[in-house]
Length: 308
Image (cartoon, rainbow, N blue to C red; front, side, top):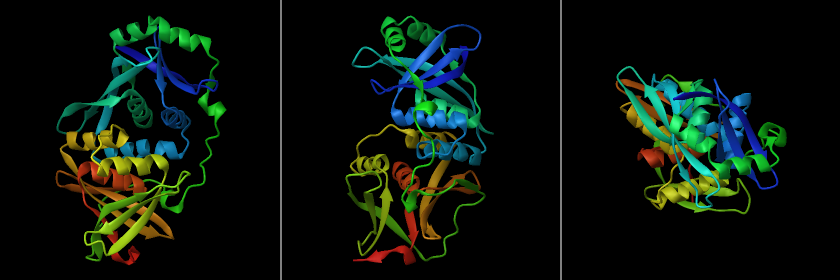
């Protein structure tokens, strides 16, 4: 395997292409990964240690790993596929996780793995066959060399954009999951209403009798992810990765809990790992999506719920 460092996160504004470059530590070869815009911005933000909306799901994932008393030992870029346009490659990675009981590996989309590596300060390796294939790929090299590239951090401002109140929350790892008082109501996703702009999407949660409801505003990506999940449409994203790591640690997502603090909707994900219980504060959208993937119950205080 070849040890690498991140040599840049760049954008070609003329074609709207984003690329992450991994450079060989002891050599001249480089691996160029074409990624989506949100992935590029998240990786660039993680490198600069900035808090932006795109980074938060990876931040959540790194806190969950810490809560599980696990660590990521290495990231390996292990395989690739040529995309349909035949002019770029899509890369896969293995995330190697260690806890007190065992070592295991989780397959992941390479950009997700790289973001996790940055936040957990984990080395990134590339299989020699992957590095050689990419470095000798004439189509990929030509595409990289012919375009004008800007560093993503120079092309975009990373100041936190104004979010709906339900999305404003710092992350915290909690020693215990929330203590139920008996005043909570279990909710299910009943409906998603889509607006024309980001953060005009509303996910309607109701009790099982559909007598009480709770509206939660979400961004476009989160809202459509929830919609796909309730329609049983398969998704492959960083929330799936989070749940796979929890399962690999022989642990479970026990619940999602939605609350209101200082007029801002907050949420907590509860986890059970052996005899331990812990929680992670997060956005309501994070909690709902993770609970749907993990088949965990969603609760809210009864005082927050509305009647028709």
